[in-house]
Image (cartoon, rainbow, N blue to C red):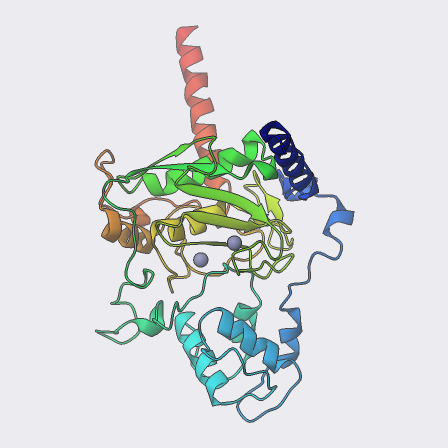
Length: 364
Ligand SMILES: [Zn+2]
Ligand SMILES: [Zn+2]
């Protein structure tokens, strides 16, 4: 076969692959989502766990094996071969460790508040990686014992981070997703949340294969062993440095510009999830601080995009502070955080309009 024929064949194959990829669904806000689209998209892949409410050691109930699978996926159970429906000691230990990580009463039972947490959509990255405890369960608690005196942020085993020669990182989007400028801007804003507090910079490039950080939306099995699970359940995952892969579940309903989100929808705020996953790309693990960006779960519709003190302390332990930011070493607890809506933006807009009005009156 001539080389030109070979290249043409490759080109045709690429077009076929690209055209067979479904595209992710983005909506500017909840009211713009067609009702028909939201039908059958509110059931989490974990919704059957609701039948296990109150379950405890010694009981045998259908569905417990799936729950064990859940705890195995997130690092709480080592053994993946246990397919029994028995609530045994290893599951009790897993539940207790989970409860400790999520600041719940350590009952070892599947009480309602524990179940409510388990059912929330979350990041696919494990809370305990390679058996190394992270979050609360891996911390030595000092002081009054309520966990307030320990740092809650965590790192991946071995504390991988981008080397000192890589402070200016590039990122690119998988071209098969055909993302619009509006969607790309969401990621630009998400990267800025981290560059504000660190010496790191992030620049978008077109060359997907040469970029340090590669972002893509995929469905189900997409080749890295970390399958997505349809609507809700796991939303996204990202790999520790220097792998640089950030993957989001193509089957989610993503909101890209909704600052008045409602928790009643199954739609997810894209920037909130992107900010969290970028934390993983830079080397942060999960945190037990519910307010932190690196907390593993997020409710549908919730918007949480500004770093908490805990996130800033964690990322600055890896990279130091932003030399151009006068507040670089001061955590954001002193500032108003945008975690839920538009109040701050509206008040700034009103102030600006008022000032403009006064200026016009003055000129006239
Ligand atoms: Zn995560
Ligand atoms: Zn993946």
